[in-house]
Image 1 (cartoon, rainbow, N blue to C red):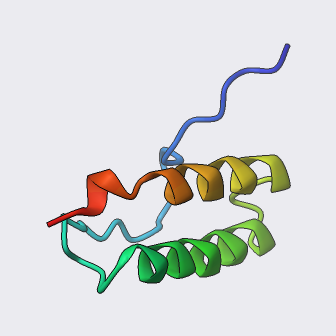
Image 2 (tube, rainbow, N blue to C red; image 1 turned 180 degrees about the vertical axis):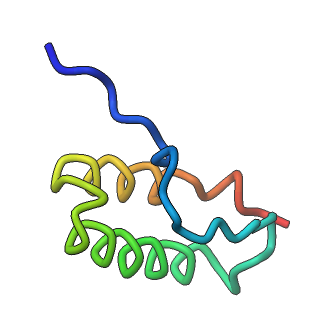
Length: 68
């Protein structure tokens, strides 16, 4: 069994924007942003393909948490 992935990664130099409810025009805009950022992070070696998939699933399920 592998150790769980720490999210967000600790000790890196990545910016951590604070996003509150209503920061996106709709859930689709949020998911599109997560798709873009997670793809960038995977290319940079900050996420594995499996990690990215878990992030995308969580973003897709986060509809209620993003309601203003």
